[in-house]
Each structure stands twice: as structure tokens, then as C-alpha cells.
Image (cartoon, rainbow, N blue to C red; front, side, top):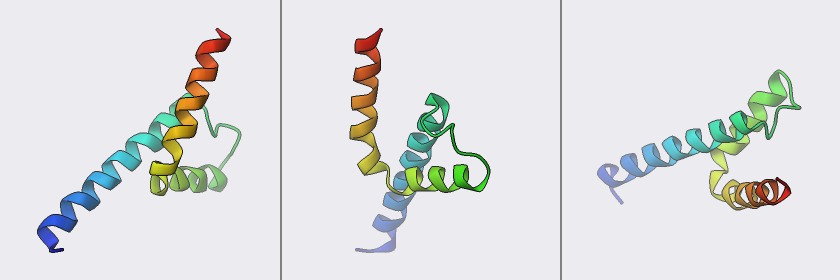
Length: 67
């Protein structure tokens, strides 16, 4: 794997990670955390976004079914 392939993949991973972390932030998923804990949770969502999408979709379905 060369740099011409690795760099765009890394940029897309970071772009999607940022988007997923921001969506979780605006939905209030980790609003109970303050200060440094809030940044740490945001970082975890940013790095681990592939594992965060399925639970988020389940939470959205449950929220829609309640209303």
C-alpha cells in the first residue's frame, strides 16, 4: 500500500469519524459529561465510529417507536 492510497483513506476515515462524533454530540448522547470527560468521549466516538453506528441506529429506532 502506497501513500497515494493510504492518505485518502485516512482522510475519509477522519472525515466520517468527525461527522459521526458531531452527530452524537448534537443528539445529546454524551451530554451528561462535562469538561475533559466530554472531550474524551468525543475522541472515542471519533476513533471508534465503525462500532458506534449500529447502536446509534438502534437508539434512533427506539426513539421513533416511543413517539
